[in-house]
Length: 328
Ligand code: ADP
Ligand code: MG
Image (tube, rainbow, N blue to C red):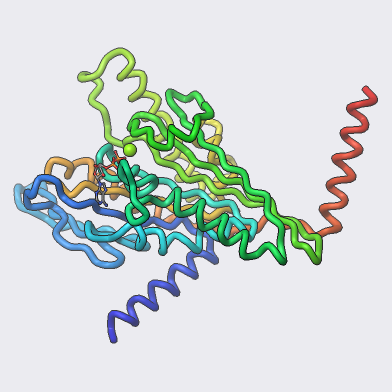
């Protein structure tokens, strides 16, 4: 009945969002670990309400709305299935960026990678995305040939470095880790080609670090994290204001995400919330940031597709360039 209509509406809304290329925001609240009454007083499919102390000493309520809210009992499978169409669009030639935001301990790595010793049931978005992309490309092999390459990167203190597969299990909360999948496709009959790319990013913890409490390496880490997360905020803000200059170059993180964070790409932010009363301050600032992000309209996402003729021309140009380099 009613539930079904709501569900249909949400699907339609998300499809519209797909067309418009907005930044989608999904909020996920992890299960409580301390059993204390939570400031999260209500959740439904698309909103979360917090009880917050107000200035006059009384309690007030604040509701935040998102494309989707996943409560503590949501499963990894449910989270993935709402993300799958976005991930699959990479094989149609879109650039996609999915990032996990939230304070340390709020469940970012759980969503993206899964818990230690994950099972088929508890494994996170990254593994499910890879498996799904390989599976779907295999299914399409009679009409389109895909080349898929996968790369793991970790950004620690503004330095990029390539890391091995073992680092997929790295639980560091002070670096950003990024799984990137590049896709090239060629339609067998038409010869048309396409390119797509997806970044799956587990961001460093977003908590504000009290400068008086940390020194040395920890202070340096905190400053780098602040720099990259505020650069991310600046990029998002300037996209929202449709400024002609978007400051991608201000951090390694935004440089890395440049091609997948902007008008022509599809972006999804998983914003993570801890339900404990101790986390309330961070929870409020996380949700405020996320709500700002969710209001951004980027215009239609664009597919990276060349006709066989354009592809041939590009190859000729590349060939001419290579020939002229050889001559020099
Ligand atoms: P973060 O990466 O944001 O620092 P983690 O993903 O490491 O946080 O989560 C902190 C702890 O909470 C881990 O033990 C994790 O397994 C657990 N956890 C997080 N989210 C969930 C969830 N949705 N369901 C069950 N356990 C979770
Ligand atoms: Mg983590």
